[in-house]
Length: 166
Image (tube, rainbow, N blue to C red; front, side, top):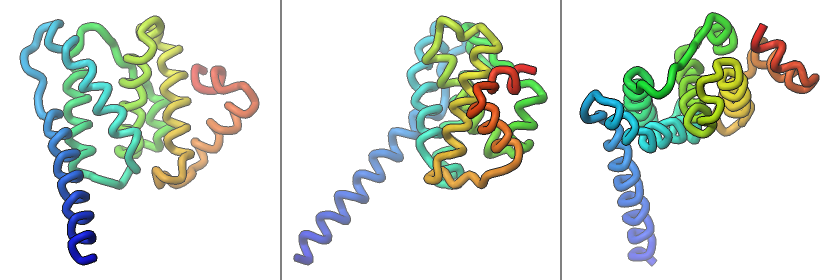
């Protein structure tokens, strides 16, 4: 029985190490030309997915590695333009952690919806919807706040587009 428990603990520890090692791949993007950033797209998407799959206050060091990689990619890619207007700071309450979540949503939605990736309004709307889904998931431990509740009411009334884009 003791060996079984030790085996299970060891397996869990090795699993955690190997997952953490995957995140070490978020360290740098090699080069500065279009092909380097194109090749980095899958890792940028992986970083965004990681940020959106963990609670806002969980695995802080790993989240920061993923965020750093994703932001390097966002800043350097010539294939996408990312807009963050003053409404986003209102929707995120100027909270740095929530803004990081929004940036992950923006990255994910741009890469997943290439046909509309350069349509500023469509990507903003899709990103806000993904942001809301993240914030409303209790596992992500985001406390409700007035602006989020307004977004939810607008979505429930099928008025999200008007609320977000005006």
